[in-house]
Each structure stands twice: as structure tokens, then as C-alpha cells.
Image (cartoon, rainbow, N blue to C red; front, side, top):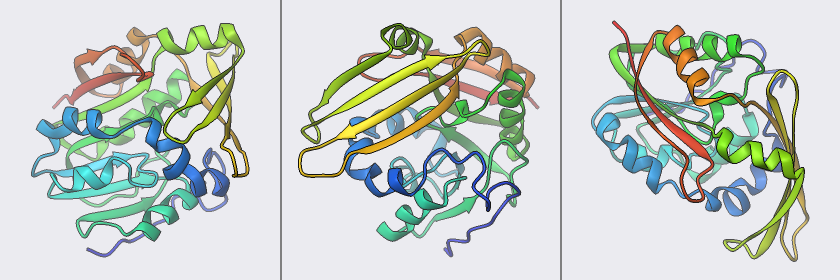
Length: 251
């Protein structure tokens, strides 16, 4: 399948893109290994098997590649051109198409999807509850009636304590270095996390991201307002800092 890349308004000029060239260049080697895809793929399996599937925030293909082995087709959306370029450089599976677009706007996609998913808190990259509801509605608009949306969303049980700590440095066994997080949250519940990844013998990588940090019941309320019925919520566990939501589009 041809990997077509489309531009939606606000994407070509880079507005709102949190992961640029520096992050994309080391994402697979320094960042993604801390979050193995197996748990997400196992949770997605019942919904994506044999289906036409949408991934929101496809990045470098950490989850899309194993999902493509299960699904009939995967369309991956991301607003970061450098992340998509890294994915293409590795080789994109034949049944995967990549679309450069911003989920905060209507998605420029053809046809409907039998399932959608978004991992590592991608859909939290908004600045208000209204913006989150609109983003979820944009996903709902391209789903078949009754199709599921599975998503990981930042867990307040994990990130509120990080805010209290301010700055914390943790070892990263998968690359032998450390990652330092500096975390704040404002009155609008927008969390800003600065991340510094350091590994011996390599230049440090520093980036920042902003996400809407809200309680589980508020995430569920946004899903409902966007046209979904929440089926299950799995709280963050062990080293996974995200709550897992499964919702189904209301006909």
C-alpha cells in the first residue's frame, strides 16, 4: 500500500507539534524501550484483529507495526513530520498508511474505521476539556457505528505526585543512562513536563511536552460528550503511567 502523507491546516507550519527532529532522532533508541508495546497490543487485539484501524499519534510506529500484523489495514495519524519520517525510514508495513494531520481539527481521512486507538497519552496533548472533547469527537466522526476507541491517558495518581516532587531523576536500565523530569501544572490543569535524557557517550536530549491532566471521571465525561459510551477503565499499574480507557461509539 502506498504511504501517502497529507497536510492538514496548522500542520505544515509546525504549530502545536511537541516532538520535533531532536526527539524523533532518538525516540526508538532512548525513549520507546521504556514503554514496551506488548501490553498495549494485547489489550487492543480483540478490537483490531481483521479490522481497518486508526492510530492517533502513530509516531515512529512503536505500536502500529505489531498491530499491523493483526489488522486488515492501519492508518496512522501524527502531526510530527520528523516522527513520521523516522517511521518511514525504518520501513512501513504494506498495510499501513501514514497521514500528517492534527487531531485537534477534523481528520482528513477517507472511509470509516472499525477501531481506533491512541497510546502514551497522545490525545491528552490539548489545553482544555473542550479541546479534548472536540478531539475525541473528530475521532468518533471517522468510526463505523459501534466501533471502539481505546486510549491511554495520563494518570493523575502518577503525575500529581511528580508535580509535588518538582524535579526527579531516575535510572533507565534499557539504555544505562538517566532521565530527569521537571513537572509543573497550572490553574487550567495543563501539565508541563520537561524531560532530559542522558546516556554516556551520547549528546543529551531535552524536550518539553504539555498535556491536560484531569481526573478519570472528567476524561470519561469528555468521552461521553464526544459520542462514546465508556466500557472499561483500567487504572495505571506498575511502571505504566497511563490509565487505559475502552469506549464504544454511540450509534
